[in-house]
Amino acid sequence: MERTQVAIVGGGPAGYVAARRLGQFGVETVLIERGYLGGTCLNEGCIPTKALYAATAPLGRREAFARMGVDLSVQADLPRMRAWLDTVTATLRAGIGRLLAAVKVEVVTGEAAVAGPGRLRMRTAVGEQNLAPRALVLATGSSPIGLPGIPFDGERVWSSRDALQLPRVPERLVVIGGGVIGLELATVYRRLGSEVVVAEMLDRLLPGVGISRRGEALLRRALSDQGIEVRLGARAQRLTETGVVVRTEAGEDELPADVLLVAVGRRPITGGLGLETVGIGVEKGFVVTDAGFMAAPGVYAIGDLRGGALLAHKASHEGLLVAGQLAPVVKGEDRRRTQGATLRDHLDLVASGLVPDVGVIPQAIFTQPEVALVGLSPEEAAARGLEPRVGRCPLGALGRAWAEGEIEGHFQIVADREGRILGAEIVGPHASDLIAEAALAIQAGLTVEALVETVHAHPTFPEGLWEAGLSLLGRPLHGA
Image (cartoon, rainbow, N blue to C red; front, side, top):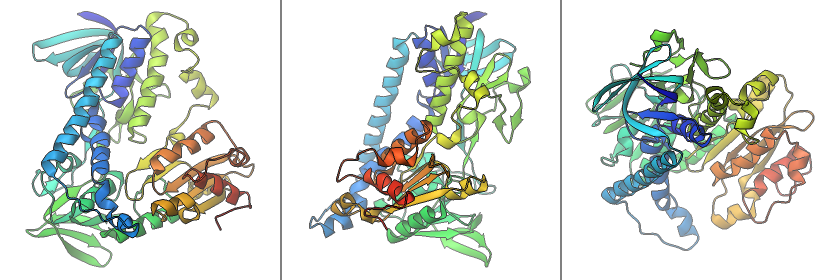
């Protein structure tokens, strides 16, 4: 049986980041991946979605440019667009391989399963092999959930994977699920020319994301202006020859559809992992761990596999933390010296209550306009008894917004009674980039006073956070 210090199953954002950091610490590491390095995010999720979002951006800005006096005559070439997506993912995938090779991480293509305490069984093209790692990290990710009675077939019923293959632009597309994935793909396919209806079974878009009621209403109005119809409280029942039947409070209704895109969530990949051989617990499909990511003695789980927000950057963050935790253990070195100043002792932070939870992990939704949020919404803060103070700035209060013809949206800051920033929400262009300032403010425990005392360049979109802070303090300049 071959021995190694750490074995990692899964080469997505959690697994490859953990492997890279362990390699930097000089830990002997084996990474087993059954598909492509980069996982769902790089190959069939975040990256191709954003590449497609960028590629179709001119299609979504034609009216805005026309108002500026520029007429755009653009059309989509699907084969070339597919080639572009393939180039992006292949380039980044190769880059991950080089990064791992540079720190001497051994990458194995194959499947792996826990075979008992301290044992891992690998299945590759050349046969089976047993490993005896001192520590095992499971980072197998998640996969799309289908609907009962409406299975994915790649023709009439698409998963997000199918949609990103760009097989065709359906004349009528019904998206089941008004979450992040559903709305991002609805945006892209509307730009490409599909008539799009989004059917969400709950009473609001982006359920579970934490968007405020005000922000959700802004987004819903923007989607409507683009020609995307939103049906709330609509639950998919069955396919028909011409569409899909949904049930609402008023009864059943048939939505015409050439293609049904199902985006109702994801489930962790646990099948065949051998969790039972070491007594690993599972709750609602997710692996149960302690605060230090341990699922069983010597076995750790990170990323989508252990639940929480299913976000690539959260998974990578957990990969860094578990690597810093394991490196000194498997090497027999002092933990703090091994981790260095930039990777703090995770378990000590858990004990002190200082570990960032999902509340300070930012989220970005690539719709038109973009949506980004971090921390607590006003509703969430009130539910925790924090007596929130809220400051807002409408996007239209910014000179930069008018200059770019993008004036629908808002900036929102939530603070406690002492002025400490608890959360932020942005609906507008570049929201995915702008939210980082708010995330840093929350992580550092900054107050609104500190934010507004920071000079922001003019004319820029970040001024919106500054203006929202001024509004919260009762002294707005340009916002109402």
